Image (cartoon, rainbow, N blue to C red; front, side):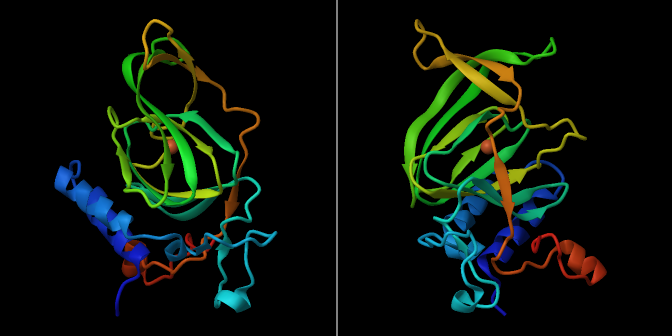
Length: 246
Ligand SMILES: [Fe+2]
């Protein structure tokens, strides 16, 4: 039986991120090509859906329905899978919402812009001081552009590609993210938020200063309604994956 695109993505992530050592450039490029083929409908989202509630009528679209891409009133995370090695999920934005500057400590992140337009600003650390109780340093801006789907997947690495980034949704939009390894407070990979203070005499650079999680940042959850995936756990224990039906 032909595997669905999310199953193919999961299988590739499992193979590449669970191996010893970091994936090679060719392997990351392979993953990028897989992500490039994925569309909103493949993760259970009708990008043109206008319903008031984010979930459309299941009878119209099949057994589990689809999420309505234009029905979100807050930033919404759709969890697809997470294990020790990687996570897969989708962030959906209503127009006008901002996901503030945040980092991805020690991570490789592949992002596929599924639909819509989003302004992306991203920095890499030039200098970094973590000796005090607050992280502060000089950031060099590497991305400062509007990305409109369809667009090739972007990749950021621990020290390059724009590891500290923010998103401003210009229209309803969605971003499919693969993070490896995933965020983990326990293993020293928390998500940290920053403010950027431009340096007038140094165009393209800013002081990045850690700040508390913004009070106005709201991220809701929504169920994943795309095709089920079979995980290594299912193979090992003969159970149906429950974490993609939350
Ligand atoms: Fe991010």
